[in-house]
Image (cartoon, helix red, strand yellow):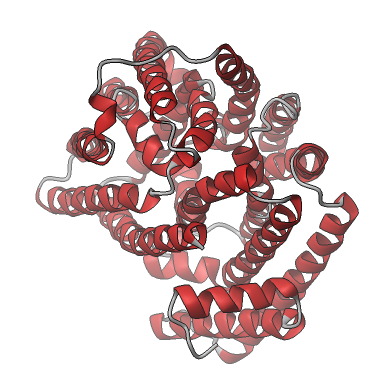
Length: 507
């Protein structure tokens, strides 16, 4: 039960951090659009995507080494841990230098990515973003040890503290002195401070990392890491092409205003993904421990429970977004920041397909199966870029979203579970898709009904109606899910965990 307790502790802290951080992000965005012109919001989205592309230089070193840490941590093999962390330090230092160097080289071509630019000093803004990304690699590698050792909650405490401080400072300066340059300089200051604090904490938790005598890694472990890094290069390219090019394509072919509007919707979706990211960061190390120590039957059982949980989460969020996404944007920022319903619905479909991959990806990452599906992300990248550019040129914003949907359906949707079930855990692919389509059908029907009922009950866009709409969606989606799946083994397991680990004795 120690594994469940660690995961529960991580999830509790991560949830608190998620709520605080994302509430503040929404406040910061509101103050931002009131203090600075919409073009600055577009520039922010564009530069975020550009620097995410530069992070391709990381080449998957982090996930490959984190995977290699699971076994020595489970076996308390401090010598191997020290050797792996020494490799981590050297690799990330080289990556940080490479990102800054490549980024400086790209500076003269920034205007190529913008259809029409009226913002001066964009090179200085870009340089601050570049330093923020590059410098973090000199510190952040040690935080990965906490994650691999099922201590994500420590990371969450430091990250949430840093992000709270950043949000407060940005809000104050936007009110007192609305300067975009100061806004991002504060981001750089907090990034450095936050990473430095994590490093100090890691040294206290793992004092043996200070020891000078570090053994050489075994040939087998080196070869495993090199093999996984080679495979992760493809995965990084695929991830970059799908998740870090939307704003670039919109900026190039539609304009900065489209980037600004898109980034607001994406901030809401990111808020959900940040929570799930915290959740899966909290349990992936526990899954890695599970895969090292437990039987095939136990692995399969836990996978089905996590897949069931992911589908439940995806249903709740999709129902809420389908009925209330534009209502939220209008209340938050105003009508001029709204997209058409068609675009919003496509965003929700894309969100659902992406979210439903999370259980498979968590087990793939914990299993280290990067090599086995190394060609998938390359195909995904080619399909996504070709479809997104073509469709955006011809159909505007909706095209970049459909590019993501098409590439997901043609690659990730079936390749990722196939690879996992063939090489990692013993689950039948047909059983997986049987459950998948069952979950998707329930989600679709519940979302349509929830929106129909909301529109019948509430005609005006007000905060009270929005809150009542959120409650309505939560009640309907959870009631439908519990009613339909109450007899499943996964539901019984989750009920017991909620009672024992989260104090929900009433269940």
